[in-house]
Length: 143
Image (cartoon, rainbow, N blue to C red; front, side, top):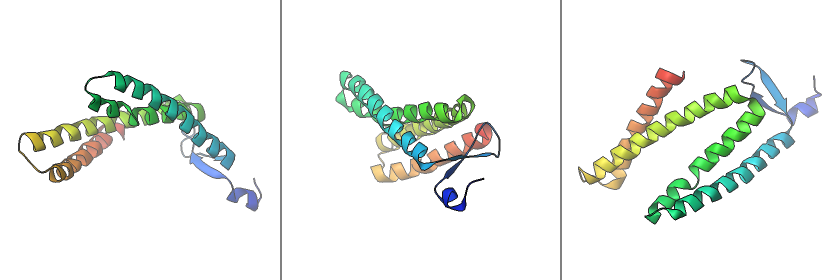
């Protein structure tokens, strides 16, 4: 299909529209995806930061900083490159991760405030619960 020298410069990725199929993309396409992620992510980070800056207390500002914007930029590029079906699957995985993260944050707060655990010990303990929750959601719902 391609000469051996060209194959070395191509990137393969899974094509969600054809199970088990592979698409070949030149590195320039990959570079454009990263550039788009950077631009879209930066714009959305700025919008979320302005929203967070308007909230009181200011400690909420960081909550709206990076993660939502990177997720939205990634989903937008995934829709453009791989289609809506694959992006939907990725969005479900992001939601499952967010549920597990919410449980992690709640448990960490309970361990620190209610039971007066040290922050590092509480965070590491809750991390095991986060992993178990994320794995359980993946095995039970997403797989």
